[in-house]
Amino acid sequence: MTSTDHRGRPRVVVTGMGVKTPAGLTVDSMWETLLAGTTRAGTITLFDPTEHSVRIACEVRDFDAVPYVGPKEVRRTDRATLLAVAAAADAVTDAGAVATEGHADDGLAAPMHRRGVVAGSGVGGIRTLEDQVISYAEKGPSRTSPFLVPMMMPNAPAAMIAIHQGWTGPNLAVATACATGSNAIGEGARMVREGLADVVVCGGTEASVAPVSMSAFARMGALSKRPAEEASRPFDVDRDGFVMGEGAGFVVLETLDHAVARGAEIKGEVLGYGSTCDAFHITAPLESGAGMAACMEVALSDAGLEPSEIGHVNAHGTSTPHNEAAESAALSKVFGDHAVPVTSTKGVTGHLIGAAGAVEAIAALLSVADGQVPPTANHEQCDLPVDVVHGSPRQVASAPALSTSFAFGGHNAALILGPPPGTDGATP
Image (cartoon, rainbow, N blue to C red; front, side, top):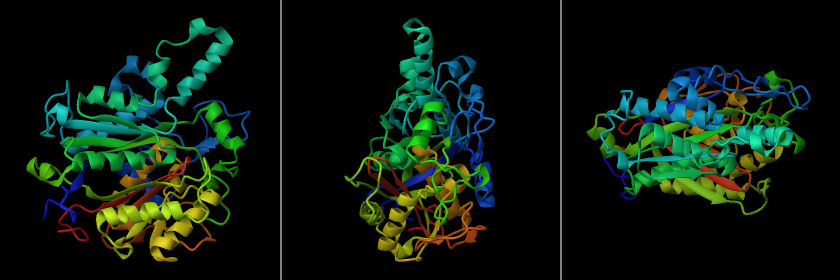
């Protein structure tokens, strides 16, 4: 088993995973829900949606942040940050196998200044900002919360993860809209590969099921107007928009040598990463899918793989007509029509915005390890040249997977994820 990749760079492996999603609060529960292919959309409970044209979302149910940060900090922290801190803590525990107290040795075998964080959010603490604007309008400036700035700032998740873990290495915040989670993992892998840190926890978070946010997306025509149980239907001929979701997903990355030296359980490998921009329109993708295709090709080149070596694609698949037409064109350009199994877990989770790419990367890793691709919920008939997995999980041979993310602003991100080194389908 070689410790370097095809370019002579250190191999980067995944040793921990943590999620807080509409599909489950743990990696195992989320995977079970994804394989069942049952949507988690329902009537909004986080605020009263009575006056809204769209009243459904995919919420993270039964989430309790108190065990992670304590009751006092819950009141002073935006939900997006709380989801991030919790998911990242679960990933670190998973990687170290021993929960920490007071930043004690947790089995990660790296000094605190060699441990980094890369965390992102598409819109930051928007729920807190909305609440405070309403409070200002009703009660005046004297009632503005002194905690507003740290609660709403987009780097709060990255900062708070570091504070709670005691990690003093590189700390970066990513904000590339719906590509945030994928970019965070890609940049985290780059950080590890270049020797800037020994261990990095990276991922994305979002909590934008909030009144103004929901109404804004509805007004621009991005949200589905269907009943909850059939609203999110990626790549289906009757798709009409996405379902807003919330959640967080984080992974722990380190070099293969570092993981082996400390006896870590390796969950998978980050083989390649691509990042491009359409430079075309603030919300619409290039209709040709050229920017998306270029991003996939960059990731494949980074991994040293041919398209034929990819076992399946966990697509961005938002359930929006324009995005999926462009994405299918990109997939056809790279792989050929119907040439690779494609799934979108957004049929179950809704669109997690800044958390989407990270959660979907974890789903892709689970598919690679488990040998089955989860079905695309609510998909019945496809009008695009894509081999959509639907109805039930599909058994696949162990092979690297491609996970894609495309965003407002033209941001494109792609990750190539493989099984643990030394297993079937992996580079020896």
